[in-house]
Length: 101
Image 1 (spheres, rainbow, N blue to C red):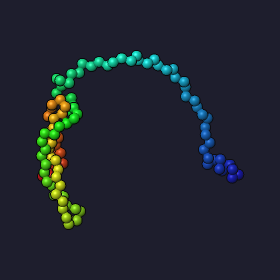
Image 2: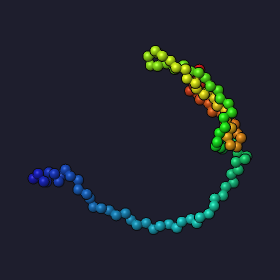
Image 3: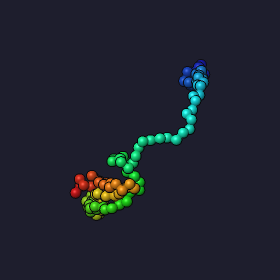
Image 4: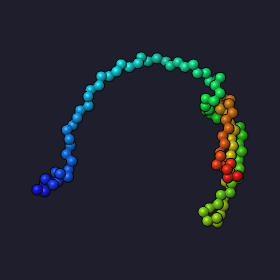
């Protein structure tokens, strides 16, 4: 009687089903890729690494603790102008710092 109750609680493994065997497809022969893309005449296709910093705009922001007992002056970069490897100018702006000014 106890064994029957335990058997009802325990999940016995069901019938094991086997997956169907699949026929392997033929592979594509190895070859070099070809593209008509020219990075010289592209306007906005991305940023080429590495970036070289040209200028930075830094502001001082006073940050207070939770109880307004002490404060610290932190320097935050608001705007940074850089050039990428292709010579294109890249401007990085931190909108959160600008909003706090």
